[in-house]
Length: 485
Image (cartoon, rainbow, N blue to C red):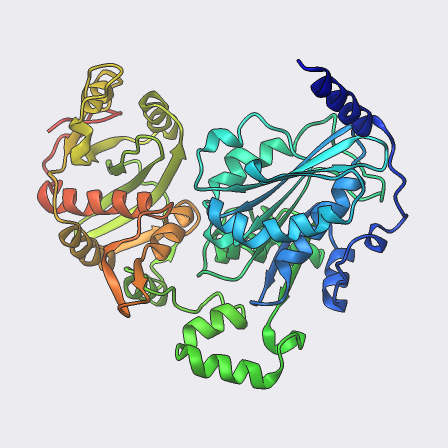
């Protein structure tokens, strides 16, 4: 190392180790002046926070400055915070400028452009990092970390397992639980979004609203579970909930809202983006009509498992992403959808174990055509691996996607879904949609492949399987785990 490099390293180390004099209110340094509603939302924060607010409210700049303020107050020598968006590009385009603006006002702050990370001094003399991530990047980037605080931007469009399987465990370090220099809870989270149908963001917000009012909520996931009155109610005091419509806040004047609605020429889009409507139709949703009819007919309700009937499954097998499984029982022409399971980053043995632990008596496992693909590592097909694990499936031949969608649309009117056990799968199927080509003003023929695709693909496998290999009354399904054709 050159003498100059050594000197620079010593100077940098001394900068990192010296205590920085900071004002009691860090906003004396920052350029951010919160609006009254933003200030009140910040004041009402608890450990977990659901913020549902309209476009142009200023939720992103509020969240970024909250990250900066709380990072500076971190009670530990090495604080770590994260800002997550649906894609890496969205995280950079939405938040990086705000984050750099905040860092520019803080003495000894450093900006690492290549990592989309800033490093700030803390009040106790340590350092804290804030990094931007897209949930479309490999999940390994998040695994193994700890976090003192996290912001989810556009939470309704982020796969829910990013929270449940990756981020939530990062906030459970017993050595870092406690309070920061402002006596606010450490290891916290903000989920902010505009609605995108009645999905996981809706269910989370419904529970958060009840808890914020001191009421109980069920943890089943569905909206019918959110306000039940039986012994399963859970009470929590660590959640805050905010929902603000454009017609309430005054951030945008009435004339601007009138013009926006006129220019958008789409009532659903306006209601979703400006009035925070959970019920506005998702643009291009493929099964919206069928699911709405099921709800109207009361066919999303309590179903449960009948041990006298075999359980058939429909699969979508992921390589590097999720695997999804639907569980159904057939009674005459009715298909009772009793369960749903989805996970990512697991091997086939995991899913065989899931089948075993559920304790169902199985009929046919309908597997997609790619189950016959040979894995490079083992040289075996996934069908042979499943067979070795005791799962003998029926391979559903490859079919045109549109034919599969038509089969699902035919199947759905025959279905009755268990509202609690299948809600995660239903949420995803409801959001499965075709992308809209703004330039050509048409929907693309091919559905968008994202985190909602796995449940929809598994349902398509099930529909095609039931259509081609329909179980009959005389079939022998005596094997507890599975029965081969």
